[in-house]
Image (tube, rainbow, N blue to C red; front, side, top):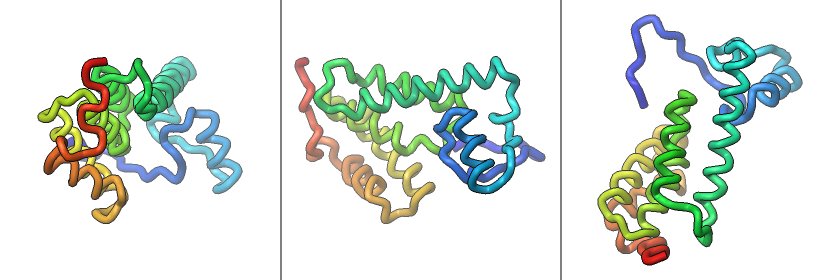
Length: 158
């Protein structure tokens, strides 16, 4: 995921880290009775608004990239999605984003990139959900041979 600095605080999220600030706080207050004070929730109001804007952009890109009939979805949008995850500090949640990148590269017939992102997706999904997770298994299979995946070349020439 990323190197951890000596003395850096590690936290565990009890909720969806892709939810906007107010929604995260409401869920924690109503279900667990506390207000989160992690680094993301402790941002000042302008920074929180900026973070929420990034989370909204992530959700929009994921929806677009997950629509395999979309004429707008592309590897460039997948790269933008990955950059937003990193900008928001969500490297540990990138399994789905790597999966979308792998699929969108396969859809346009770019084998090396599809394989690279499928490998990253498999590793990240496995890290988060275990080796038997459906997406981890599917991405390991795609990484072995992207050309045999159902998505291969479906968008080529568009």
